[in-house]
Structures are given as structure tokens and as C-alpha cells.
Image: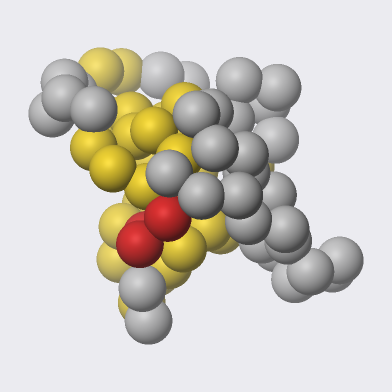
Length: 70
């Protein structure tokens, strides 16, 4: 599958057991799904953690697509 990366603009604290991903300003994420709905994307951080985060809290760094195996 093809994915792209984004940089986090604002801190976000996930709710326990919600499937959300806590993110910190400046962190880079790999977006694995955009069709989650209601302004949420799914992604992976550099620590291997996976979950949902608010799309409005990130900016696309470059539209570089790449392959990874999850």
C-alpha cells in the first residue's frame, strides 16, 4: 500500500481505549488511512504506535508516496 507523511502542528492526547493516537508538536506520522471520517485520519508514529488523530492537527510535509508493510 502507498502512504505519505505529515508533521504534527499541535499536541493531541488520546482518550484511553478509544483507538486514538497521542501526538506531539513537531512529530512526523505516516498516514495509513484518510477515509476514517469526521476529520480523523489513521496513522503510525516513529515508535510503531498506530491509531486515529485529528486531521486538522497535522500538515502534509510533501506528497511523497512510499511503500511500507504493516
